[in-house]
Image 1 (cartoon, rainbow, N blue to C red):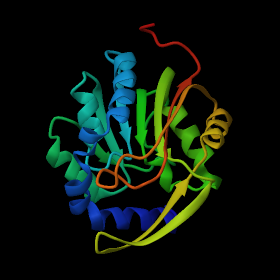
Image 2: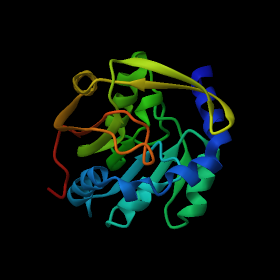
Image 3: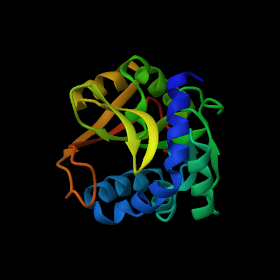
Length: 220
């Protein structure tokens, strides 16, 4: 694993406890996000295993499991995985890197990657998306959410009174569509929204994309 990925892993280990306190219930105040996840869940219900990629404390996995999906979660940070497992003992979670997933080809029906691609630099984003496409079933669905920007990174070295070393990449929607197409996905939906109030989230515009791996599932 690269030093950049190690820094990301160690940083989230340090802030895992505070992350739970601040973020675990964030979907309660985000109706756009809930509606996006509801559409994702409606299509994938009963079609196979779905992964919360970069799951953090497992709040997205929890939301989708409560809507009938067969969920698992993967995160780079062991500290985050411990939090997710403790908060959601009925959902399997494990440590993994989206750049090199220890998963067979075509293992999952869907992937929800909510704000996990934001720590992947432009020189690796197509590789990460290609790896996600590899582990999806034919016809599998990817739900991708990220901060909107001009493709630049913001370096953060302190978060919630903890020393971290995190690069947050802010991609354009059209830019990400291009990356998805390079990775072999068919982009089906592109949505954007303004930020919710400062007491809910960081003040950045957000993008929500649905992309599909070509092919048809056996249940279609």
